[in-house]
Length: 158
Image 1 (cartoon, helix red, strand yellow):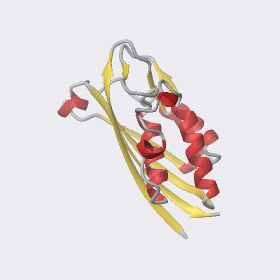
Image 2: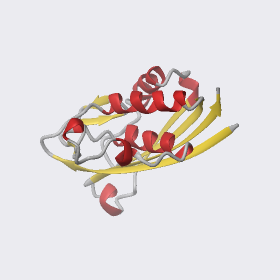
Image 3: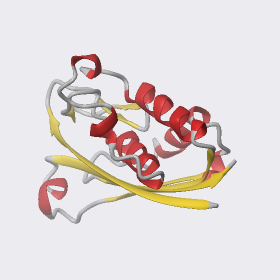
């Protein structure tokens, strides 16, 4: 049996924060604002994983008003999420994600993100696709005020 889920996240870019995507710190003069480390890519993957199993979303499991998650590394949340997926009897078939960001360019970081996420999720690097798109200077992403991500996950019964 297969189950599919999709996830979306967006965070504002602000000064004084680290820019972390896919568990990788990216050299940039701004970072993502959020209760946790604001890793929008991991957050969209978490939402896709929970969605595939009809288990709600990231806020249901890791509420942003809970002090336990203040500043938390999103990799920890992803590991907890994947443990739930495994407990439900599923493994990841593949993940397809898109990062929407005007700058910085993501190309140099995508292989690092893929490797990092594949290790965390116990999958082969060939099972995770990450793409990046600009928003052609449109909306808050195109105006360099935010970064958005979306992910689709296909799970299969173990």
